[in-house]
Image 1 (tube, rainbow, N blue to C red):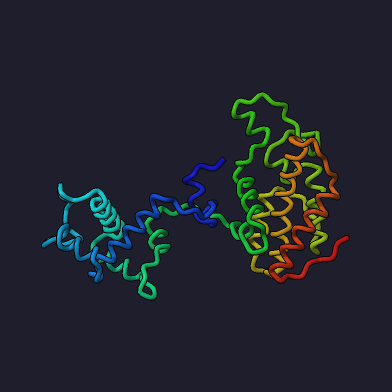
Image 2: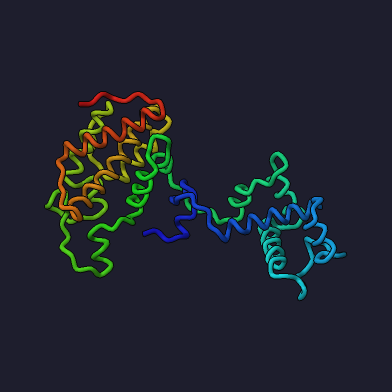
Length: 278
């Protein structure tokens, strides 16, 4: 599985857009820094100016022995903000730029404080309004080779027979399942034709990069293909698990009809036309 740190990054960086708690806590403390700096008329601000700041300058004062741990944490985040913005004046200007309708926009502070990662070009192919979230979740894991395929389990020390349960011929790994397996490639050749495109048979990552390069050409058509690709990836993994754990096997026609149903329902929800199917 993915590490927690890799989960707490935006979709465009290959994560699940989860807020990291410690980083988010720093954003909350930045809000209190802004409130103190603007001398907001509140009992809490007046008390801190009287007993903690006194005659010092909040932006340059050092922590003292009588300060509470929460106040010391506030000063520590203040130092990080000043270091990140390269000065007190620029730190105050940054907080001012994050103000909208009289409120500090915490998401802007969060994006500024965290370290940005490498962006992926296919993020919008996986995360968009035409794709169910559970499909997006699984495709992201598949693209990063984080699913528990047989080769991954063997790499962790488990003694297993590596055989794809879909085609019953080749070894199972991410590249084989999506879509080099004869079972999955046959299905992926049929579905694009249903969507009005020429049949394709490639790897999952190749398909995602191919779609990412064509996302702005006939946007509605790209959404349909994106929905279909993500739904098929999820359905193949679901079928694989059904055969292993439930001893229940379905033919390719069943998977095709299931994907068509899932895609049709989702496209109708967002107001896109769908191809007819039997």
